Image 1 (cartoon, rainbow, N blue to C red):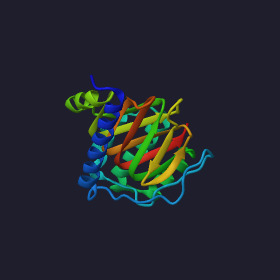
Image 2: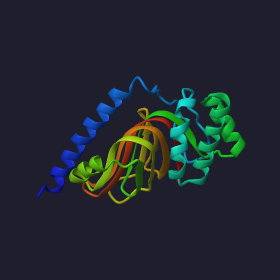
Image 3: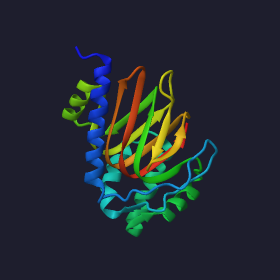
Image 4: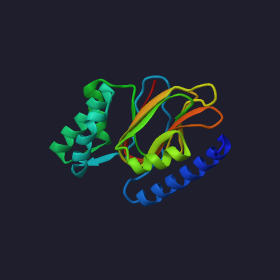
Length: 213
């Protein structure tokens, strides 16, 4: 029987290897940039200037729609799909126009690498790859890794691990509940117990929508 400390060690090594491979293999597919300022608990919008979604991604965005539970996030993605079908692509200015049209001002938009975790909350991704989920279960308590069409997190903290979120190496939230939606990428998500309950979500994505809880 592997004790908790051994599981923690295996998990950290396993996660680091997987994420490193994903970042290397995807470096040419998605342009990762650093953000210029973090999102605070106040309502404000930051839109990454390098966001660009194209016609070739429409079918995958359409597949993601049924798995988006947040009403406002779903409305945003539906607008993105419509504009791509009309224009052929959606960039940062289009995102700004969509935000204005929908009157949504508590979210910010990025492209690149996200890492979010907390001592309590919900994390998930679709599709769930059975074999990968089984491998993950052996090392942790549940989750999956690999291609993620749509992923989400809602971390609200806990006794041992405070909620946090980093995007492209910048702290977006620290010790503050936050949630997000990640579309079209590669990553890892799951639940574990490392000295206390823990849930985490991380990966490289074409579009990341994040907001405070």
